[in-house]
Length: 186
Image 1 (cartoon, rainbow, N blue to C red):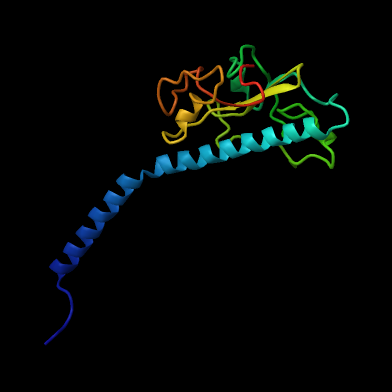
Image 2: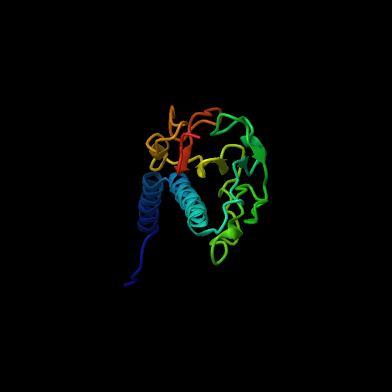
């Protein structure tokens, strides 16, 4: 007597595996998982820049390198993006005051805590980072989030661009940004 599987049995097992695989893909939603990963990176990047600026302000012997400019790292941000005035576009990632965040972080005691300024994981016309400083040594950093999980943070950050109509925000929605810093009303 032969032992083994019949063709029908194999087809049934393959069909069951296909149904399970389809269900897993639909439940996990890989596009949303990738959006959440990019949002986590954005939140981390902006937090790192905020910490580097705060360290600079706390330890620098002179705040002459603190910038009151309004900058961003991609041409799409000059619309005015998260600010009331259009920022200057600068894709540079240098921490010497010539980058998109134009405060010279090398003035920090012990040197800059960042080797280079981060850029958005997508870095597109919709997703980019921007900076604005003020004369009172206050600043704001902004970026957009795209996932349903982190998107609501854009309405709860206390900033001035927090009237998101939906998550992820549509490309034409210029009222929806994640804003952090010492003065998110800039």
